[in-house]
Image (tube, rainbow, N blue to C red):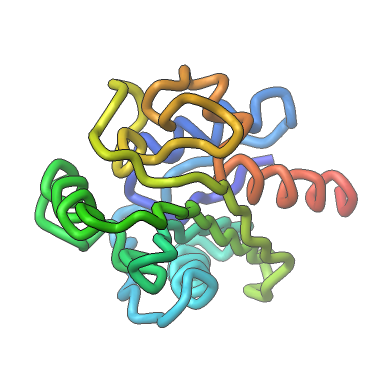
Length: 189
């Protein structure tokens, strides 16, 4: 079974295909012209917007996710603006570390909402996966992307960027959401 992943991020497609290896599902990028306007106010709304946009182009099964870093002491920021919090990944990390400089409560979580749309264009299933942790004092690790170097995974001594791909793919917010989606697809197949 092929499912269009409503994303232009090849890294994300690779990560999701690695997580779903052996499930009989291949995730593929949408065709040219995929350019959703992410103007929702929640991860759920943005996930739906992307899934619907990909469905309009393909009229087949589509899956979209919207994810980001939510920091308790910053009232959930950067949240849905995680990818737009600054111009580059390094500047986004620097901004968060700067805003957290004198803050003791460093609790945070990654959230990932996934929305599955069927070939008729209806929402088939939606789920939000969460990965709890806290913000470190400085960036550590070379793996991953985004905020991974400053996110210490709960119950570990490692940032997300210090985990190898296999370890990350078993604890991440994206894994938790995708696992529920894959389990749902198995039930309806």
